[in-house]
Image 1 (spheres, rainbow, N blue to C red):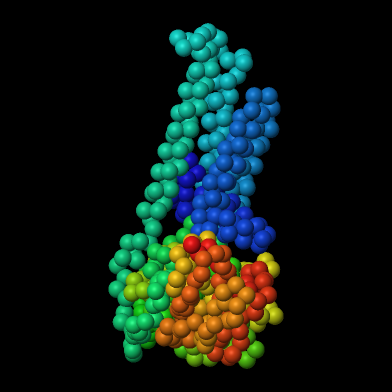
Image 2 (tube, rainbow, N blue to C red):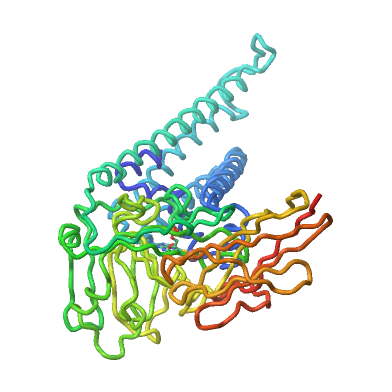
Length: 488
Ligand SMILES: Nc1nc2c(c(=O)[nH]1)N[C@H]1C(S)=C(S)[C@@H](COP(=O)(O)O)O[C@H]1N2
Ligand SMILES: [Mo]
């Protein structure tokens, strides 16, 4: 019932999603990392399914309680309604009706409970006679009604979900005609792709997705606004049409998640179309001392990047296109930020609606009080894509290949080590820019037996990746990626 009502009041106002969202925002960072590690990009589905199971157990408990302590069971349903309503009201962008799904759902629950209790009641008016199957008549009626309730609930829940997603912005997205980029469009030179490494350009459907949103924010370009305010001389507000009229550039930028483990795949490289944020910031004219640019999304998530970084001339983009398409909804449609050289959690706000100039001393963005660094330039990293861990290739010349990245500094050298042998330079594919990953490969004369392959990269400042293994928190993992293979 609550899901049906949420069709009218917004997908985020259903109790499951609203309570789940509050949980996501309040669980300790370690638990969230655990979720990302264990469930990967399905962590949201796992959370919602887990919540649904908990809810089922709670309802079961209330049902048992209702037979002896009716008032307590009623209070239990009331509590369910209030918690859901409070959670929904507390979400960013919650409308006046946000409490309705939980409240109406609780009332429906109360009627259902009263009806089922009557059916189950020892003092019920139905005589306790055995039906044809031997099951007592009263119990059969109870089970039948329970089945009807479960069926109607499942149908209404799934139906509500489907109807909510019908309101999605897919239609608006399909209608977007991206403007052409001015100036030269980057070309990927032949040879930028090393055989055996991941694709140099990550397809949109393969691009990793990380965010705190349980339901993907649905932002209609027709009503989208970006407000630039705070410590500026000229606050700015622009609409979607005004944004499209601004100069657009197209750039390859490799985006990485700070949660990426050594050797992990929370990294991707795409061709982004967008307008340089520097020009908009220059127009807004930040006041001296405004050292932090806070970006805020439609669902209230925030990140903060140094003002100097966004204004130093790098291709920090307010992006609308990804690999030639409007941004996919999951990747921030209609507008997101992409900043070469900074981890996503401090710079790459999806569904962006607000930019506020402030001081690092005055505002902590979403992940900062949760134990992550306020400032987080990407660390130099490298990864072996082939051979894979546990592979058993035959002896002979084997190509070892992968990617290395040090966004905005650029990769100068990649070295490979076999067992405890010397570090040998790998051959580097041509660099498209300092802002993207660089592919490398290395022919290895493999002899039979178990071997450990290691890789390390050096950036153009001459700094080599350190061997010390550090976990992703608070500002990015360190250590060398290694792969164990047994050559036949
Ligand atoms: N609105 C919003 N934007 C967000 C996030 C988020 O939780 N909410 N997560 C950030 C993080 S941690 C990363 S790594 C990147 C990931 O972008 P992608 O999902 O397009 O790969 O988005 C960033 N932008
Ligand atoms: Mo991230």
